[in-house]
Length: 188
Image (cartoon, rainbow, N blue to C red; front, top):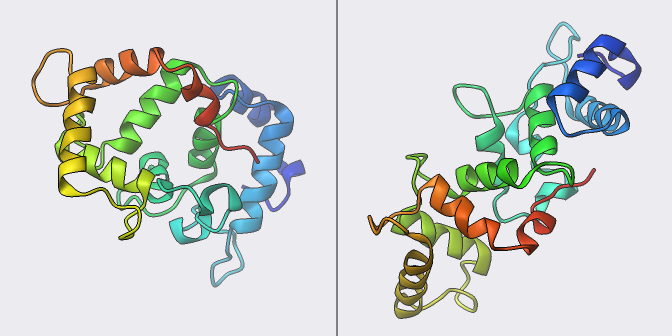
């Protein structure tokens, strides 16, 4: 990637528009923001991957309780540390207002699946609740409250009664939550 947004060629820009839910202006702004985060190697070349710790300095992610999971889910590197420009576009596209409910719920599920096993089990749900409520003594649920809440979530969501929530069960629950789409966004 070049140092300025103007270095995105028309063909590349068109391809990014076809592959994402982003407008031309949003892609150019994303490119500008991404290149501002990039560092240079010892030869002065821009590194193609921005480290997660740098991505997390963006105000849009800084206060998100799932910021680490978001970066992990969208990273294509084997070590899951850092994002390429294409990873960054995928992230912004999935969180854009134009993304479909199916796309948003797919990525939300992956973000909430802390152990990356394809289901939301009791441990994933506990981590999810702790991210949402905070893990301080003032905000943390008691063990009994947590058990009851997890039981309620599974009772509502676990259609096949296997003790976990799979993607289709999650998407079914989300489809009945009209506020989900508007709350699942990041705007540059």
